Image 1 (cartoon, rainbow, N blue to C red):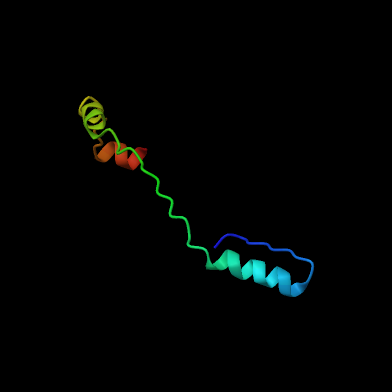
Image 2 (image 1 turned 90 degrees about the vertical axis):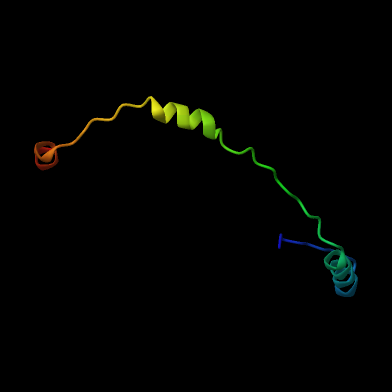
Length: 61
């Protein structure tokens, strides 16, 4: 819950305003995120050449 502040001429007034704030229905916020470009990523990975490791490379590097 975010920080909520309230003020008033008296403590009672400030509390009443705070209660009114807390009784409000919360605002629902959604965020849509674009899915990753899977096809482009797969095509890129198909063209990546990797170096093979043999026993010698593992021992010495």
